Image (cartoon, rainbow over all chains, first blue to last red; front, top):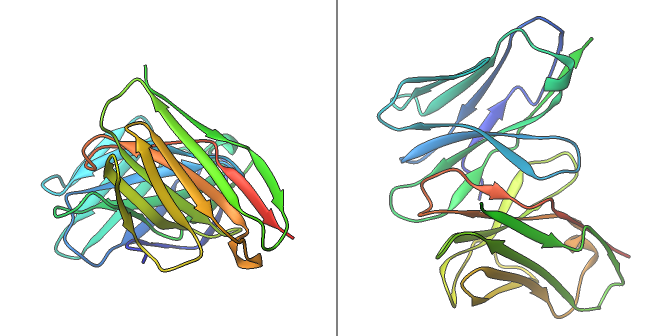
Amino acid sequence: SQQGEEDPQALSIQEGENATMNCSYKTSINNLQWYRQNSGRGLVHLILIRSNEREKHSGRLRVTLDTSKKSSSLLITASRAADTASYFCATGSYNNNDMRFGAGTRLTVKP
Amino acid sequence: SQTIHQWPATLVQPVGSPLSLECTVEGTSNPNLYWYRQAAGRGLQLLFYSVGIGQISSEVPQNLSASRPQDRQFILSSKKLLLSDSGFYLCAWSVGGRTEAFFGQGTRLTVV
């Protein structure tokens, strides 16, 4: 079964705007990861945040994690048309080695 | 450096035919290996994962099976494909299950 649930399901913005995507999960986690998928391709890892971290930055990406609310957000600042893709969160648990993904947010950045 | 190979890229198979998709990893030892299926425009469903040779965990009962005959080889199989088995199949690996995962380019399976 899936663990993470992203919202919104789809997001359309203009180039230069910021994009915020959210992820909620159900069970205790060891870490939470965000991935990007271009249409019809494999997923590419963007950023990992551990359960004892609250915020992490990587370039134009900012990820927050609130374990009390079991939620995370991914912010892409100053978006570009090349950021158009689907974005997924994935959770890793303490007790086993599975990795579960949410349904994803489809981001469209209009030039 | 580590790489993951997944093939074929596309596959069209008739209903009732067998299936074998292979995934191999290079440049690492004892990886965790995963098979996911993605329906069109949807998220990834975890099908199987393996933490070692011969160790397979199945997430959902289905028409598919997985095997890990070697440390860096993960095979997804079916004896008789169903129409509902169509989808985009992705193989991935990680170290220890608690770090980032690396994905193959996927196999688009169409069962006709």
